[in-house]
Image 1 (cartoon, rainbow, N blue to C red):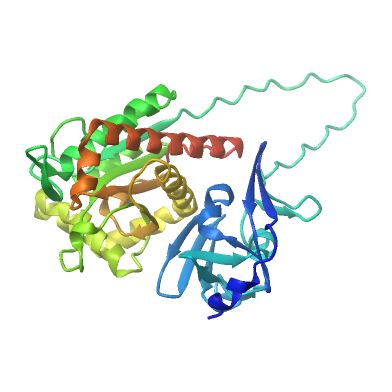
Image 2 (tube, rainbow, N blue to C red):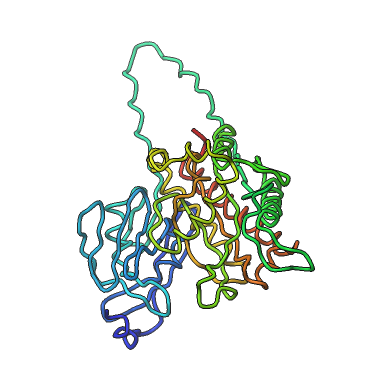
Length: 397
């Protein structure tokens, strides 16, 4: 590990990497070190794209542009599709943030991921729109030909399905008394989901709610509702709870956003188990229908949405970070049953810890729910805007 060795290596003000996405340009500060320029990868994802997941003490996965890039602290090699790719410097952690060499995004990323190009002359990393092939000109004829009638392409309608987690006899997590009444996850998720709907509708997006009152909806049915609505995006709202065996469970705070994939850490498996326990309210038949084999088969169908879901999760995390009083716990992954049957970009958002007295009071307040709803809606529309600019709208199956 050489992270401590570079502390004295910073020189003058760092230069910038410019990320261009259509007409939008975003400068990313670089840190000059003895081993070359480095960037704070986690803080750069909103501009560059993708989802960064910590999969172990020293390992990270960056899912971006259809590529799965594995990074290990202290090792100047990345793993992509089982192949080792050399880096100019080893990734390291400084001040709690992952630092990666600039060459990771200027040299390796354009080679292994779709839709990226680095222009060394301008110093720009460009999130490229894949151009269509030029049409072949028709052969010359003696008689002029009329151009064929071309119907204008109709825009794909924006439909977002907002899922308020739990409901009915499934209360979800139970928090401390707030304002003289007991806090239940199902109530907070319904309130936040309503604010997300209101904000999205103000922005011209059609919204379908999986529930609008205190009722039980099967986990599998929520994804089916999104498919039937031909949703562009599926958002599932939830509230986290601390592990009672933690040293200070009441002090746990913060927000995190998940996309569907195999849980890699104990904490991801903990949240997965908590949210999947809702299936017990649906009867034995539903448990049989969601056996591990079916999960794997559906997860394989979801692979085509892995990149998009990771990008959406990163957008939501960045947007929540501007309003949430708690710490950013990052983009994560787990095998949530509620996401398995939603065949479109889908995320599960843990908007905070209901087991934390201060954070639960904020989430239960109209001001907190409005801030959360506006933030999630803003991120969702920004994500849809970016897809449309690239000519890849997120319509349903």
